[in-house]
Image 1 (spheres, rainbow, N blue to C red):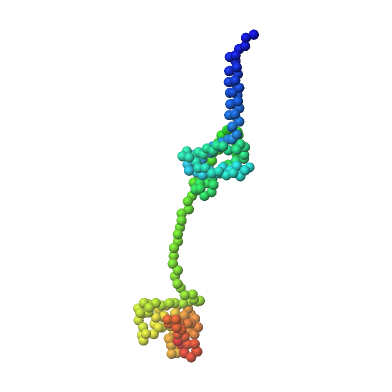
Image 2 (cartoon, rainbow, N blue to C red):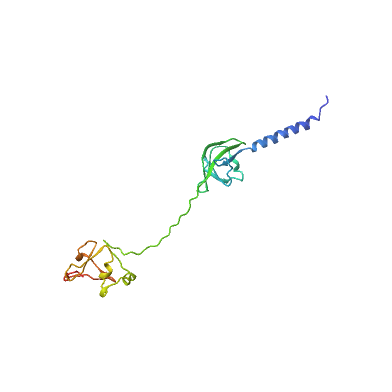
Length: 209
């Protein structure tokens, strides 16, 4: 019987091919995810931060969309669930996509709707504190310019305060005039000049001045 030796090389080549094929298939242990970000008008959203979270392990990865609004992520664990969202503080806001499951050696695509966050305008309000003496009741201050511009006989301060409509100078009082402020009895008013009281503390004066 004559043996056919030409079949052995072909047989060996077939075994080697099967072994290499099995090795290549064994290396495919992950999957991929493709995220396409667009705004409400359908335009591609470039420069958007996209956060991908693998819930079983808690692993969080953040990527940025390219010029056409796409993020391609490879080497992800098979299964899920995964969550895709836009992180806060990135200048964009968008929907959160949950329950994403990846299959072995396959690319899953999700469409992410985003919108640019409105930027709040900074409003700076400036002001200055006006020093005002705390007082109870009705009062009136007269500046030096006001005093100098008011004509006064015998330089009596009554001529100055009489210009205020809330102040009544009563000449009917004996040895007057008496000064009534805001309709109050003249003996219950207080008048000061440069902080010094000008009142009749003892009640001896007819006009309380």
